[in-house]
Image 1 (cartoon, rainbow, N blue to C red):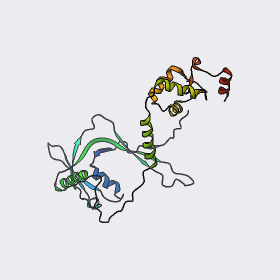
Image 2 (image 1 turned 90 degrees about the vertical axis):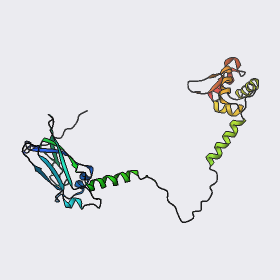
Image 3 (image 1 turned 180 degrees about the horizontal axis):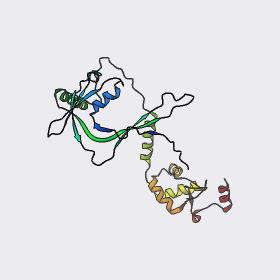
Image 4 (image 1 turned 90 degrees about the horizontal axis):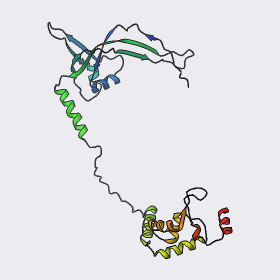
Length: 256
């Protein structure tokens, strides 16, 4: 079994460029995914102070904030950390614009840069962020299903008892009538049945004798053999010492 491997050229012109790997809140990623490509999504500000770590802040643009009615925080801060000895890179994949062209374009793969810094974008915890969290908790607490009071009267027509319920009740009554008869009486019914046919399955014998299945199997184990092979698989026949029919009749039954 062979596996086809497609070869693609990778643009490595930006392989040495340093990039940041930033984790942003879900509400920001959702806005960015729905934003047009030409819209400014925000601005990053890095403030350096002597003897201190740089302070990185991020502000969402007004265009992103106005995309939906639900307000989201505008101001955020970056918690910066090192890569930790890992080698991480950012790749991009550009799909061809016209796949049905005479000379189809190929997918463009490129290395956008090497990750030199990791950061986590966090809201400042102002009033807008607290309101966002309160609304989220309220939505999560709402039940998935609600009861609704209707003003119009609804008339429900009674439905007759379904057929499967009738059959079930009938079977329950039949089972209730099955009482253990005397063993000799059950044997007499079995011998009379086996005089007509050589082989029976358990369902037919239960119907003929009207005995509980467990009790009937106990009696059958004494006078019958249970066939495990074809052509009479899962069927009972009398043991040789209890058979009253001739060998010729037995062969005829087998041919049938």
